Length: 331
Ligand SMILES: *Cc1c(COP(=O)(O)O)cnc(C)c1O
Image 1: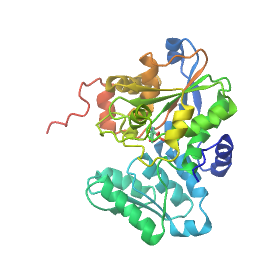
Image 2: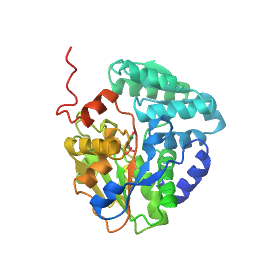
Image 3: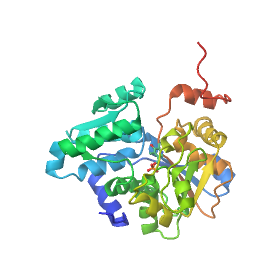
Image 4: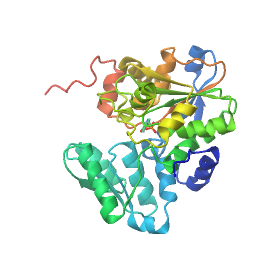
């Protein structure tokens, strides 16, 4: 159960989810290559169905269910990219998905996840209340919880990005990955290092509330205070009872760098103005780190652009260079 995910697991995941997820393009960025002095490629995973890579892990987890589990259905408490992905992956297979969320979640997020095929249960006023409802559904109705990162099938699914990347850029020397709970980083690192042990994997998080970095520093999973960040998909903890991603990331990541909000904004702006891509803050940390001079590599670099689910008014404010993009719109 607590076995680390291997290259072989990722290869199995790839055949399991073939046809259910997009093999996203990897394209060279002329501008970033010039800045870095080595070829820089962008893995355009924000163009994945549902707008983020999380569909890979959710699809692999759903495809790995036994017949009984498929009949009972899946459940999660995520209102972000994992919730969207699980809703879509389950509905594609005709499996019931229940996403629990608190009454504080904005209506547009609720509507989107419902549109992707999930049943929505509104419970309580906090994420903790929603998670309690998930635990109750698992205990009383035997639904299967699919967590967003600390789960071997989820990690293996995310790792399929690493296989596609090496197919498209076989001489990649450095891979730069956004890190929150670490499922994406652990999966990609397992795949890439399994095939090419010399490749370096650099994780990037935001300065404001990086749970994996704080846990590395403490030598064990720790809680961090949640703070508003442009990289909202990188917020949240890694779980005090983390089984897989903390240890895998500690073993497999060569570095974990942190970015300021201005550096993340610069990444979003560059993606839009120069690469002509709309990406969310979490997806912009690779570009932001490179622009900030925080990535060095003696060979080709691949940056993972992980998602595009950003509020478009927020995006407009960032690309227009507004100083306080989170400010309330004046009435
Ligand atoms: C979830 C997410 C991440 C971080 O993935 P982890 O597996 O939690 O480290 C990065 N970018 C986007 C867009 C995400 O949705």
